[in-house]
Image 1 (cartoon, rainbow, N blue to C red):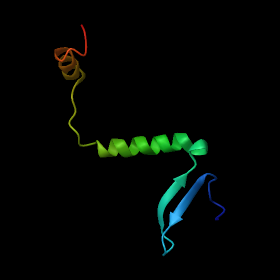
Image 2 (image 1 turned 135 degrees about the vertical axis):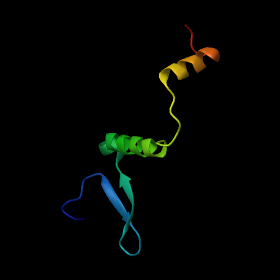
Image 3 (image 1 turned 30 degrees about the vertical axis):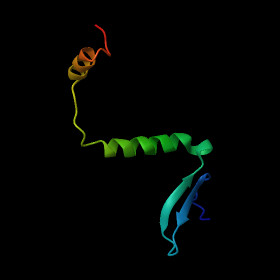
Amino acid sequence: MPSTAVRGIQFVTNDEGKNVAVVIDLNKHGKLWEDIYDGLNARRRAKEPRYSLQTVRTSLKKSGKLRG
């Protein structure tokens, strides 16, 4: 293991020695995983349509899911 290795993080390599996956100890790095996961979801959803708060409120009121 190289001296720059981080405890609780292991790389999975293929037959050619190239990193193809990572194993993260969630007990040690759960918050890191949450940040990675949130970033991936944000990137995946970046091109979804956006709606103003007022549009969402109006829609929720019409559907009976929001009062007032």
